[in-house]
Image (cartoon, rainbow over all chains, first blue to last red; front, side, top):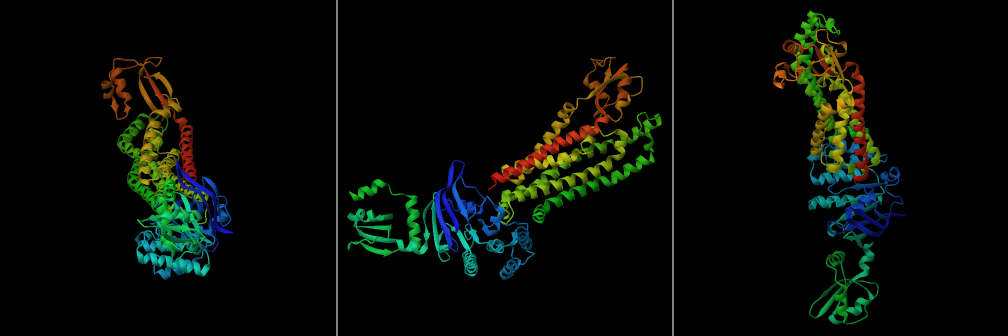
Length: 297
Length: 318
C-alpha cells in the first residue's frame, strides 16, 4: 500500500490549473520532500491529500482511501499542519490541546502534554502570545498527538527563523525514527528538507517534474562535460535536463543509466540541490527544441 | 465538537449576554416605576373597551407620562439584529483566518463541524431573543394594557417576532460572510440589510400581507369596540360612506392636531365637527395571526440563509 498514490490528478480553480496530470507514488514509511517554487501546486497537492480539496480530474488515494469519500475512517489516520500553522489565537495552549482531545478519537493526551512540557510552554498562555516557532511546535504537537499514520506538513518552516527551523525539523526526524510514520513535507527551499527526506517530488507550474527516491535520483543524474560539437550524440542516449555552453565546451546535466563511452567526455556526480535547480531552471526557461537541433547540425 | 464550538463563540456569546444585561439595567428602574404608577393609578380596572370618563383621564395622563420613553424603547427592536449578526461573527472569522482548516484536519467531518457550529449559533440566538423579548414584554406590560400591542413600535418587540428577526439577522450575516469571508464587512452589511428590510417590512409589506380593515362610524357616538387596542393606520373625518370630508384641509392644519405620530381625534372633532369618522386599522384580534406568520417568514428566510451558509462553506470553503 502506498502512503499516497495519484493517477492523472488535477485541480482547477476557475480557469487556472493549480495541479495538472500529476502521477506519483509515495511509499509507506518514506519521508518525502515536495519541492518547487511558490505557486507550483505544493499546497494544492497537500490539501487534496488531506481532503480539504476535491480533485477536478484523476484519482488520488491516501493510505488506500479516497480522502473525501469516507472522512470518518480517513481523518484520524492523517494529520496536517497547514502553511503558517493557523491556530485559534484566542485559545490558550490548554484549550488547544482540549480541542485536539475533543475532536480526535485517537488522541494521545500524555504525548501532547509531555511535548508541551518539554517545550516549556505554560498551558495557560494564549496562543497569540507565543512566538512563531512556539506556535509551529504547538501545531505539530496537535498533529502528532493524533497518532497519524501519515503526516502532511505544508511549508512548515518557511516562516521560522533558522534556530526554530532546526528544532522543528529535529522533532520531525525524532518522531519518524521513533514511530516510522510516513511524512510528506513541502518547501520552496530544498536545503531545509534535504537532511530529513529520503524521497523527492519536484513540482513546477502545476506539474511534477521528477518523482523518486533520493538515492536513485542521485545515481541517475550526472554532469557530463565535453567538446561543444558532440553534444547531440550524448544527448541522444539520455535526457538532457540542463545544457550549458561556453566557447569551447558543453556541460550537460543528464538523467540516464547509460554511460557515455567517449574519452573526450568527463563525468561528475552532482548533488541533490544542483539537480533540483537544474529541473526548476529548465522549467522556468525551457530550451526550445530548435535550439537543440541547431546544436546537432 | 460542542465544547469546541462553544469555546470558539464564547467571546461573542458573552458580548451578547452583556447587551442583554445592559438592556435589563436600562429598563429595570423605569419598568418598576411604570408598574408602580400603573398600580397606584388603579389602571388595572380601566383596561376595558369602554372606560369610564375618570378612567379615560387616568389612561390619558399615564400615556402622556410614559409614551415618550415607550417610543424610545421601541429602538430596542434593533437589538435582535445586533445579536444576530454578532453571533454570526465567530463562524465567518474562522473562514477569514483559515482556522477552519485546523478543525477540519482533526477527526470530525466538515459536515458535522458546520452543523454543530451553526446549530450552536442559532441556539444562542434563540435563547438571547427569548430573554430580550421577556425583558421588554415585562417592561411594556402596563403600556400594553392601556394601549394594546398592535402599533409597530410595540408589535416589533413582543410576541414571537423578535425570534424571527434574530435568526434572520444571523442568517444574513452568515450568508454574506461565507461568500465574502470577511467578518467585519459581513457584520456591517448584514446589519445594514437587516435594518433596511425591517423598515421595508414595517412600512410597506406588513399592511400588504394583512390588508387593513376600514370602518366608518358616527362621530358623536362612542368609539367602535373593534378599534380597541387596534393599530390605527389612519383616522380622519369622513362622510357616511367613509370618503374624506374637508378636502380643503391642508396637511399643515391637520398637523395642528397631530401629537407625535397619532392625530388627536378630539382636536379634529373640535375643529371640524364631522358627522362621521373613518379609520383604517389592523384589529387587535389579528395579533397572533400576524405575529406567527411574520415570525415564520423571518425565521424561515433566516433558516434558509443559515442552511445556504453551511452548504456554501461545505462546497466552497476548501
